[in-house]
Amino acid sequence: MGVLAGMPTGADLAAALARVDRAALNGFELVEVAKAITRQVAHYQAELLATVAEVAYCPPGDETSPAQRSEYPAEYAADEVRLALTLTRRAADMLMGDAYTLVERLPAVYEALRSGQVDLARARVLDQETAALPEPVARDMVDLILPVAGELTTGQLRVRLRRLVIEADPSAAATRQRQALARRRVEHGLDTDGTATLAGYHLPPDRAATAAARIDTLATAAKQAGDTRSLDELRADLYLDILNGVLPTDTTPAPTSQGGVELVVPLAVLAGLCEQAGQIKGWGPVLAEVAAKLADQQRERPWRYTVVDDKGVVVGHGRLRRRPPAGVAALVRARDRTCRAPGCRTPAHRADLDHTIAWQDGGPTTAANLGVLCRHCHGYKHSEGVTLTQPTPGTFTWTTRLGHTYTTTPEPP
Image 1 (cartoon, helix red, strand yellow):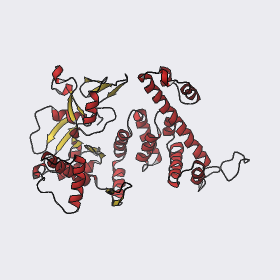
Image 2 (cartoon, one colour; image 1 turned 90 degrees about the vertical axis):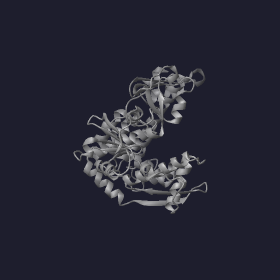
Image 3 (cartoon, helix red, strand yellow; image 1 turned 30 degrees about the vertical axis):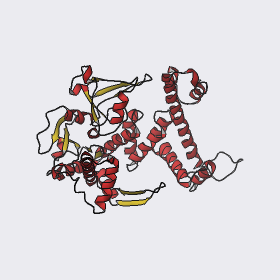
Image 4 (cartoon, one colour; image 1 turned 180 degrees about the vertical axis):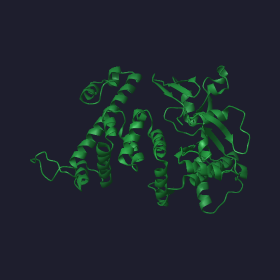
């Protein structure tokens, strides 16, 4: 099966996959086949998009027409695809949009899709997160991120690319944000299961983050007070109670513990000396002015902060107006930022601190032997056949029950 990993996508890989006898393979080998199939599917997705793009430039004709192309795409080209592939109008428009974006606007992404380096979901993230940029800038951003795009989940890719886009031109990013804020709105409606959705869009990130943090704090306090509802149920009920003017009383925590938002921010941003992006823990990158504003708004509240230098190294962590904790727990959470399982983005403050080498097996309670794991991944670590090591502080190597190895490194600044 090792030959599949190095085989380029296309006819040869398709032929090799057609000869695979799954019943004769062990678990390790089946995973290798799944990876090869994923690359081949991406290849066919790219071929479909290239074909759809060509359809857009075909003049009217029939099966006897010559292979001619128009200078401009046809206005109703998506309808030709819609009827042929039995798609909704929206799905056909999306397919035609993907074809234009990846074949013409971002050709490097198209080639990465065709070679199986990325799949269509990641390709769409690359498109969406650069859509507001001028084409040359968008291509530059794509060139920077493509070498690692296939190793990131769509969520990780979106966060990484969003930071690059902000820092490529902070003033342009600020202008786009102001334009988007003008479209802020609340939407509501019934769901198919009889429930309802009530959500706000294009909200100011600083106010949205503090509002979410307040709901989270109230829900946690209620849970600690003995409420039997789950945290998700509590958050949803409190959200509606607050909007309906029903203020919580017996579960309201003291003012000193309300609305804390954790920031990762370069020290120079707080000093007003640079426009490097900050990050709201659990949310993602934000403009420097938003991070600085959020820090300033919380001067009268205790809030957790992480200050990094120009290389992204953590130089401070703690609570504003309180002495930083002496223990290593805060340092480990600041270092790891999210669960250290591959692809998991659960924020550190919602995750467990795990001894990489179990305490009962002699593992010390030090930063070099501690790591952030969400409850699910913590359980997965202890499942049969799975091993986890921490060769250097903040670097975690996982070996799955089928023998595959994955390594996560400290989050980039």
